Image (cartoon, rainbow, N blue to C red; front, side, top):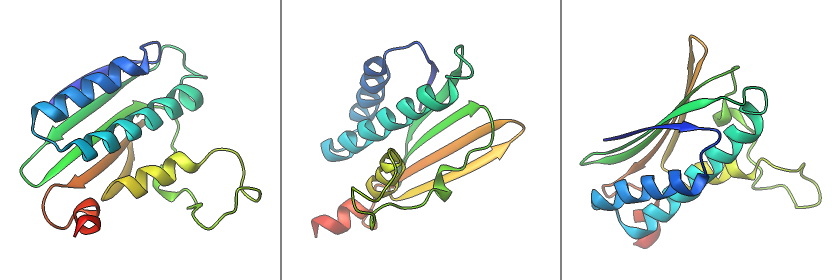
Length: 143
């Protein structure tokens, strides 16, 4: 398991590289590593833009855990309640009809098998999960 304390001042490339290296060292397939990198980039951008704007010294915990059956990406950060899993899916919106932004949360749901959120004692926790067994979205697409 990899635990990484991330500062809002840290370059996103450092975070993505560390996550990708951890996943690859645990035998995670290339396509899944790509999806993981996209999601880490999106979460980093959202935290920097929306949370660190009010708290420039923001630090968050990023955990990558690769098990036999699943890969979990867990992100914990202090801040006001915001449940990204309740964001309106934009798949049916046309480019001209939708507001700016919001596609990243849709991407997280689309590129992962599960996306969960919890808020407790001022800490937001996002859990993104990929099933490494047969029931994964990616595995279903490849059949």
